[in-house]
Length: 77
Image 1 (cartoon, rainbow, N blue to C red):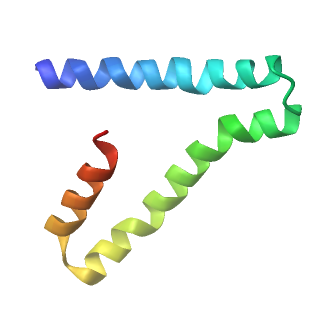
Image 2 (cartoon, helix red, strand yellow; image 1 turned 90 degrees about the vertical axis):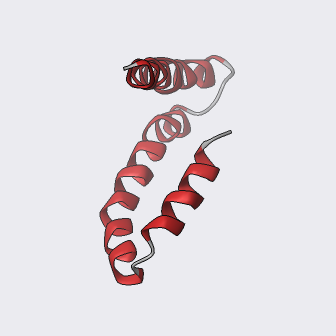
C-alpha cells in the first residue's frame, strides 16, 4: 500500500508540475508558443507511441527479464 501511494503521489507531481508548469515556464522565458506546445505534448506522444511497439518487440525476443531490468535501471534515477 505504501508503494502504491508513493507511486500515485509522484505521478500526480509529474502530471501537475511537469506537464503544466514546464510549458508555462517556457512561455515565461520567451520560448516560441509552438515549441512550448511541443514541449508539453511530445513526451506524452513518444511514450504512448513506444508502448504500441515495445510489447511486440518483447514478444519477439522473449527476454522479459532483461527488458524489465534495463527499464528499471533507466527509470530509477
